[in-house]
Length: 164
Image: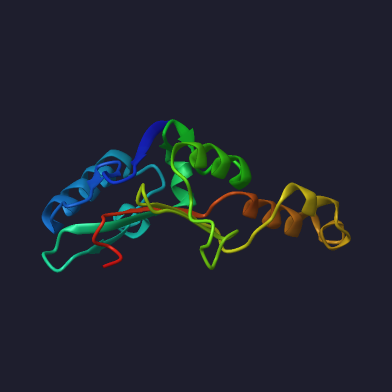
């Protein structure tokens, strides 16, 4: 599986901070051309990459969903961000750049402000939760759904100007 590299302060894969819209469209077309026909339609990558632009129409924010792990090995500092449990991933990344321990959505959102990186999951699930009665009483299908929240659902990078 091809690697999609997440570079805080730089970009994700072919999409780089500071790119103009035309360059982004070209990069998305390159992904589509490479993977079209492998169960990914014309708009798959355009929809998967969430991109925001500044007033000069340059990329200032890029987010990717966990579903891209079916296409790529998504790595940041050589760590697979979507196949590494959230608790382990946070510890590893925190050793490289500290996360904001005061963030209002801590547990769901981890922001690494010096790095320009954030990780998000809609729900929090930890290994200890598997021993609780509420989890044991779930159907096997629902248990499988819950286990998904041991991992992050999206990763994003942004430029320094994103929050200004």
